[in-house]
Amino acid sequence: MQIPNHLAIIMDGNGRWAERRHLPRILGHRKGVEVVQSVVDECLVLGIRCLTLYAFSSENWGRPQDEVEALMSLLGSFLKKELRQLQKRGIRLMAIGELERLPDPISDVLREIMEETAGNDRMVLNLALSYGSRNELTRAVQQIGREVAAGKLQAADISEEMIANRLDTASLPDPDLLIRTSGEMRISNFMLWQAAYSELYFTDTLWPDFSREQLHLALQEYSLRQRRFGLVGAQLQKSSVQTTEENH
Ligand code: IPE
Ligand code: IPE
Ligand code: MG
Image (tube, rainbow, N blue to C red; front, side, top):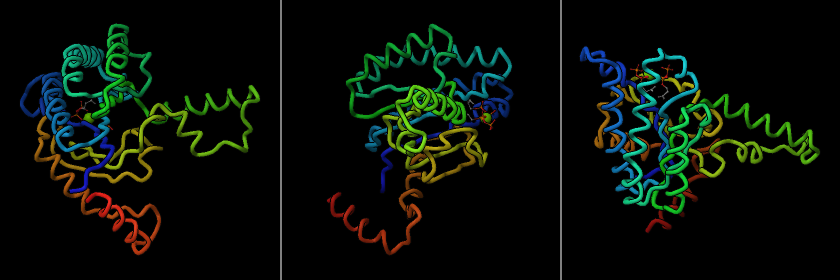
């Protein structure tokens, strides 16, 4: 089975999972957190080097205030509990998004965990929090604009690499596989730049029902995909033979 270097997941469907059971939506989110823990563990077993989880979007701030507050409190308690687990497993925590919009106690604990786990190198767990790809791109463009205005950069020299280096994901590889749960066939403002050549996998399963088996199904399908990056199949055969040889 091919293992993506960077797996990204749009964890959707918590609210519907709860509503179908006549439970408050927050119980769906709580179940969703348990699934996060089991998926992180499975990714470690599988040797995935980077796992990005879309946990809260820029647009999610517009949800009813009680849901936003409940999500923030869930995030805070998840982070507080997580530090020991991350250290034990050798996981480095990173985060992308407008982190300064998060409530202070949460951004403080987030910063602390990122610092304390900075030396861990088994896997990166990257949380997309208060994240929106258009917002991220806008901030990158503002940064480039400042550099041009200061005379550090010529407009004609702006390259794709320079843009990528000014995104929140600058230190991370692009996602190889992007999974979205809950049956919605959309990206919802997630990694519009970085997912240019990601393989997309959609499942009807709601996030609280997502399991190790479901993850394996997604990886099996990913293994069957031929990533051509705009080339033709024959051009790739040589490099795929090389890759297989390298793996043995
Ligand atoms: C995903 O579940 C979690 C967040 C967006 C925070 P939803 O809360 O979007 O669940 P549905 O889509 O309403 O079922
Ligand atoms: C996307 O889910 C964001 C996260 C999973 C954090 P949404 O539920 O917010 O997306 P839409 O509204 O269905 O597009
Ligand atoms: Mg949703």
